[in-house]
Amino acid sequence: MLNDWLKLYADEADLKKRIKDAEADLDAEAYAKYPKLTEAEIKALVVDDKWLAALDAAIHGEIDRVSQQLTQRVKELAERYEIPMPQMVSRVTELEAKVNRHLEKMGFSCT
Image 1: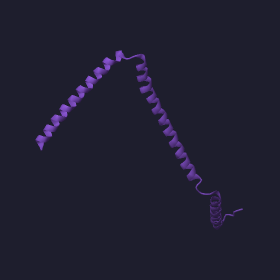
Image 2: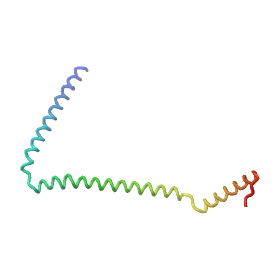
Image 3: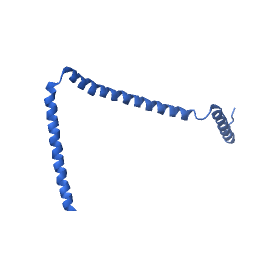
Image 4: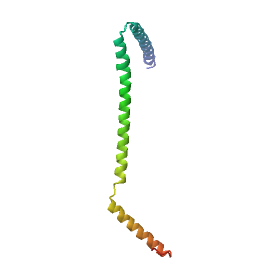
């Protein structure tokens, strides 16, 4: 098993070296191509591929952020107004009566 691992480890090192060499060759080909690009190709690369993609990502990020804020606000409002007003008034009246009874037992008059 150890011999198999050593062989796989050596294969992995070889593959990593081949990948590094292939990336270096690709970079060299790209650098050689740059001086041959036309103005229209440069604009397409810079504006369409880079700038517009970044702008698109920023816009979508902002839309997502605003959507999440709106969703959170709607949840807060739903929780806030979950109990109907007549039910809240009734509960306040009950609690007020309970407090007044306690105050009367302690000797305070509720007028």
